[in-house]
Length: 159
Image (cartoon, one colour):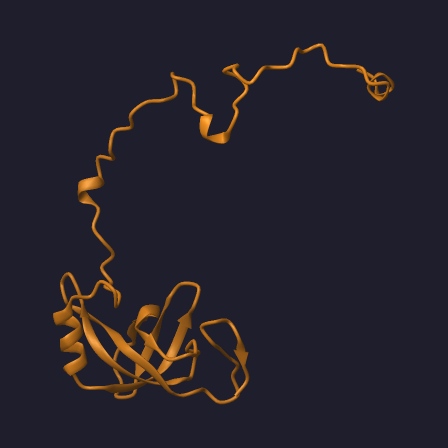
């Protein structure tokens, strides 16, 4: 159809569909797939083998593990790295040794840790084998000098 015919008010040759027609839905809730596409999906064969994340967060950690961590000694260290987008980082212990994993849910306080921050923490073993440890109840004791810090709400603070 030309633009000239459209501008004069020419109508389409396709008749309008009425509201009772199966091809013109009245509301989005009335939309349905054709019968040939509706089928029951069988559950994944791997469903029974899926295991939860091996890192228990504060919300899923058992009371006994949280109590053991709270009763344990407190350690000091320096934040080696922390990624807010990934939700985890590592702490270098002041006493030396391997770096310790820290999860975002175990950090207390209003600041996101950055490299060089001094922290206090307690440790908790990581199930299921309890061979590794992670830092819990992490609090920043001294902010790294000369670095910008971000609060959990997103405000940037220059100490």
